[in-house]
Length: 114
Image (cartoon, rainbow, N blue to C red; front, side):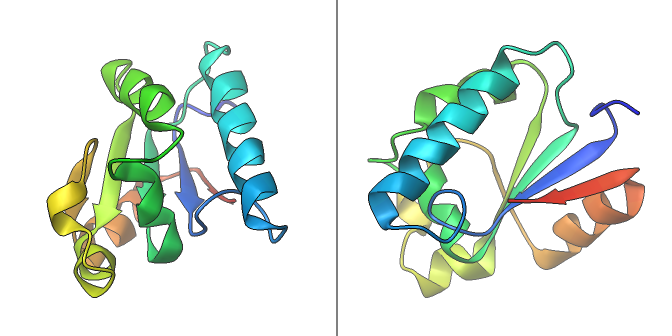
């Protein structure tokens, strides 16, 4: 099975449940290694604390912009951005609703939660 029809969901400001600096180190490494493969997911969804990764000041903006340029759809939860007062700071991706996230999940062969 390939990643081609997969959705990755990022719900933390980083990866895992470790200390904040380690979470950011891990997500940065994950995205760098993902970019090094030829097998990219169709969509990456960002919600809850994950939306902090797509706004100015995020340490992974370069990787996310490159993924988007390579055709990966980045869907960001508008409700989460509004709740965290971050809507005006988005630097990459498409601001969408929960319906967009559900649609991506339904179409996916595989959903990966980070």
